[in-house]
Amino acid sequence: QVQLVESGGGVAQPGRSLRLSCAASGFTFRNYGMHWVRQAPGKGLEWVAVIWYDGSKKYYADSVKGRFTISRDNSKNTLDLQMNSLRADDTAVYYCVRDVVNSGCRYFDLWGRGTLVTVSS
Amino acid sequence: DIQMTQSPSSVSASVGDRVTITCRATQGIRSWLAWYQQKPGKAPKLLIYAASSLQSGVPSRFSGSGSGTDFTLTISSLQAEDFATYYCQQANSLSPVLTFGGGTKVEIK
Figure 1: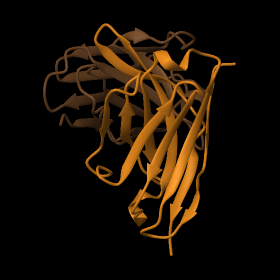
Figure 2: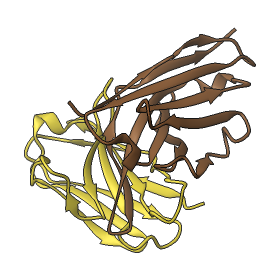
Figure 3: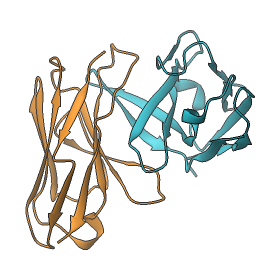
């Protein structure tokens, strides 16, 4: 079964850290770029970070640059997001997402169910 | 970075209505645009990619059009299961930053 399953969400105090993980199955993980996308309660979707299929390139949204680190282990089919110096506005559901490139278009064809991160004192 | 603006932010419609949602980019993105549907408590679902290509399994009542800076998503005959929030996303494979529009909520009239 082709799927992405996130874990690691929970409650963290401002300034603390949390690590999210995503387990991929049912497809050749090492062939795909992977992203984290988040959604604050009642708000829209916000792209957070991307890692190239081989881990060679990583990019971040300005809102998380310098605080979050995306990584992957292609031998274990896992994607991680290390979140440091958490702030209240990082509170959101975090989705692990697979991308596909077709005719110059990069889009998200597979989403996990998401994991909720709440930053509160 | 390219910004995406959707309109309207919400629309009230009845089953059977034709619904059109627009998305505008701050600079030309050719046909590099995707549309997603999200229902409450669920992950988004891909509907359209490359502005007008229907994702496998998506009903043909959904269609997309446009290029450059202006795009539309049309639902030809709204069904009960289509009440949801729709997002556009600039999808330029040359850009690592993939921006979403603010969303359009399709509500029951």
